[in-house]
Amino acid sequence: MTSVDDREQLRRTFNSAADRYHQARPDYPAELFDELVLMAGLRPGDRLLEVGCGTGKATAALARRGFAITCVELGPRLADQARRNLAGFDAVQIVQSAFESWRPSAVESYDLVFAATAWHWIDPAVRYRKAWELLRPGGHLAFWSATHVLPQGGDPFFAEIQEIYDEIGEGLPDDAVYLRPGDLYDERADIEATAIFEDVQVRHFDWEISYDADGYIGLLNTFSGHIAMEPWQRGRLYGEIRRRLAGRPDGRLRRHWGAVLHVARRHDSAT
Image (cartoon, rainbow, N blue to C red; front, side, top):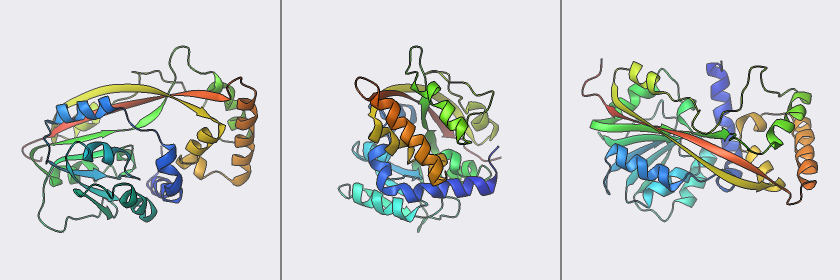
């Protein structure tokens, strides 16, 4: 289990990858945002609070749907990148702060508090309670993450490259399994256990992206575990990725992504 100190250190590593993050990380499917709007009963003009916006991947998709969004981002470089990427949206505001310590400048409440691939980085002792406090009565919490899944007949590259991860001391645990689309863990029970959110809804999404060597290495350079590697580890791993992809006819690999969207309504009273 990741300790509090480890979680804090790892989540801050994303700031060092701000310039690469927006280009390398995948866009979320439009269907996910369509479902989010429907499940949370959102209407254009509603006020949204985003926890950990990164460079604004999810922010832009929702801003285009007509919502006013306040984004709280821990990393100063990520916040600056988000401001540049979202400069065309007058109803979007970027605040550089840790969500756990952030306070609105005025007494404000939101129709939705959401996090895209950031919720798990927030202190578990704080995140649900603070989201509840910031939501209007009947407002919603939503979060999801994009992660690797491997469908039946998926690219064998990922199993084959594990021998290099093992060699550099970054191998998977012995009991690790490759999850298939639809098999990702959902956090319904965790949400319900808070007793301050109800009517929990869960939807699964999956999509595939093809990468060449540069594109895939660029993606790996936005993952906390790879950022934290020693230079010699990355050099060995990335060199082998390039060598193996160069031996393929098209020089590419297929990576399948999965996301689990959670939407829950704020309970009328906190316990």
